[in-house]
Image (cartoon, rainbow, N blue to C red):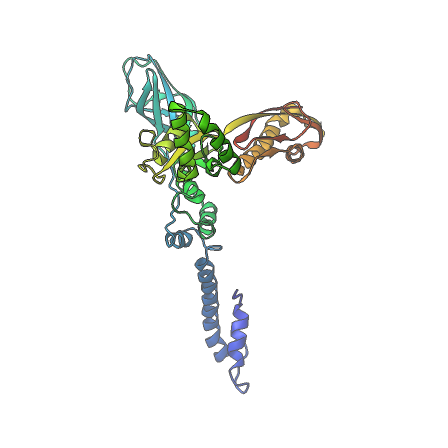
Amino acid sequence: MYDVTHEEILGRMLSRVPDKLDKREGSVIFDAQSPAALELQRLYVELNTLIAESYADSASREPLIRRCKERGITPYEATKALLKGAFTPTSIDVTGKRFNIGAVNYTVLVKIKDGEYQVQCESPGTGGNQLLGAMIPIEYIEGLETAELTELLVPGEDEEDTEALRKRYFRSFNEKAFGGNVQDYLEKTNAIPGVGSTKVTGVWGGDIRPAELIPSAAVKSWYEGAIGSMSGESAKWLKSVYAAASEKKLTTSGTVLLTILNSDYNAASDTLIQKVQNAIDPPKDTGEGYGLAPIGHVVSVKSAVEVAVAVTTSITFDTGYGWSNLQNSINEAVKGYLLELRKTWAESTHIVVRISQIETRILGVKGVVDVGETKINGVEDNLALERYEVPVFKGASA
C-alpha cells in the first residue's frame, strides 16, 4: 500500500524549497523539516493499518468482530465440557457436589441413573475434554467411596478463532440461510455447543426423495388396473394415498436428517444427539415448529459412524531410530491425517483414506527413511467410506 520512507518524504519536502537556500543536513531548513517528515511517515504507517483493518480479509480480531456484527454474526463463545461420572456406592446422591482432577474442577449436575451423573467442567474450553479417571471431592462427602469420570458426553469448545470467524463471515455472502434451507440448518446446528460439523440430508422415510412420491405414468396405469379389483379398507386406503400423492400433498413438507460430529470431530454421544434433537425439533412436538426447524419439517438427528482404521506397513529407519522410539510420532502422524479427513467430512460426498497419504505422513517423521507395503485393515488398497462414515485411528504396526 503506502510504503513510504522518512527519506522519501523529506526529499519531497526539501525539493520544494528554492535551491538558493541552504538545504544541507544540519541546516535550519533541513532540521526544521526532518521531524515533520518523520511524523508524516508515521501517518502513512497508521494509514496502512487503517486500510488493512477496514477489510475483512486482512482485519485483526476486534475489527473483524465489528464487521461481522454488521451481518448479525458473532464469535461462538467458549463452552464447558459435559462428562459422565460414576460414583460408589450407587445409592449416594452427589448432585451439586464439586470435584477436581489436578487443577480442573467439575460440578455434578443431574442424575442419569443410580451411580451415574452428568458432570460439567467449571472452566470453559477444551481443557475439560482431556481428563478422565479418578476425581477427588473438594469437600468431604460422607459415605463416598469412589468418584470417576468415565466418558466425554459433550466436548467443551474454545472461543471461535479468528480465521474460522473470517471464513464464516465470507460464507454468509455466498450462502443465504433462510426458511429451513440447507445453509439454515448448517448454521443453526453448528452453533449448538458441542457440535463440530453437520451434514444435512433431505429424506423421506429414509433416503426417498419427496419428488419420488408423485405417481408416474407407469404408476398411474398400474393404479387404474389394480383399484378395480380391490374393495373395502384396502381400496379406500389405496385411493386416499394415490389421491394425496397425485395432488403432491405428500411432498408439501419433508423430513430432514442431520448427521453430526462432535467438536473434536468424533462420533457424537447420545447426550449430544438428544441435545441437538431437542433444540432443532423436540420429539414430543415433532414437526410443529417448537424448535429451530420450520413448521412441517420433521427432523431426525444421528451421529456419523466411526470406522476403525488399522495400518500395517514396512518402514526403513535411519541410524539410531526404530519402531520403539518412533511409534508415538508415527501414530500421531496418521491420527493427524485422519483428523484432517474428518474435518472435511461435512463438505465431502464420501471420504477416501489413501495409502499414499498415510505413507507421506509417515515419511514426514524424523528418522524414517522409507516406507512401503502399507495396508489399511489388512488390505493393500485405499479405504472408501460411505456417506455417513468417518475414519478413526485404531492402531499402527510395522
